[in-house]
Image (cartoon, rainbow, N blue to C red; front, side):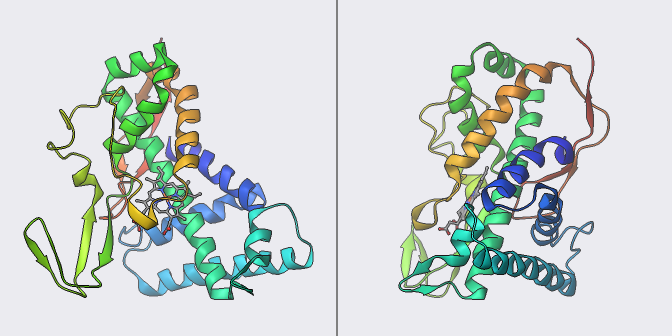
Length: 267
Ligand code: HEM
């Protein structure tokens, strides 16, 4: 389910938007696994050298495509990023590489894990799933409820720039503050029955895309991808059977699944 289905849609969309050959999507998959899965023994295993090597390879690749696009511009995001000017100057190589890699990682891991987590949630909740199959006007609220339920990005961290206080807790300038979106998404003071999957939940003020000035740039795209995938997939999920263990990513950042073996069998 992960490599063959959930990973493929966001990777193809990214490759098309950026203007990269579709076959290179497997490089993007590998690089983001190595970077996001830094703590997981199967990928980075905490090896800083391997982590640096992945950055280097990904940046070399991006710079080579940028060079090609400057020589021969095309109608794609790589050309836009490589040639646009901000405040009268082009992005430096470092800015270009960092932004490119942010797009690649943010645009594929997250949506992949949302799709996989949604499959697991819908397999575990057949009544909710059947409601969705019977009425696809439920798709938009279902996607937001699945975003809340899965919380693909569990936390981000900020650094306080001035002394402040949050709910009675003093925070000093320079303190690191971890925002646990996964916890906020199950806050009983905000959500009725937070531990129940309710695909019709509305309003749904989940924080899965973060908040404030860094609110997810790809939120609309991610919702569109998830709606599209669920519309196609949900009717078949009653025939989906797990054929092996679900293997989770070792990470305190991404709520990821590495492998979800199964087959579509039965009636
Ligand atoms: C289910 C899918 C997704 C989830 C759960 C998600 C989650 C998030 C979160 C929590 C942040 C905020 C980070 C912070 O607070 O510092 C963020 C930022 C961002 N996301 Fe997403 N994201 C998803 C899909 C995407 C997609 C598809 C793209 C692009 C193709 C994307 C691009 C970005 C970018 C560029 C930022 C940084 C925005 C900024 O710093 O101003 N994301 N995302």
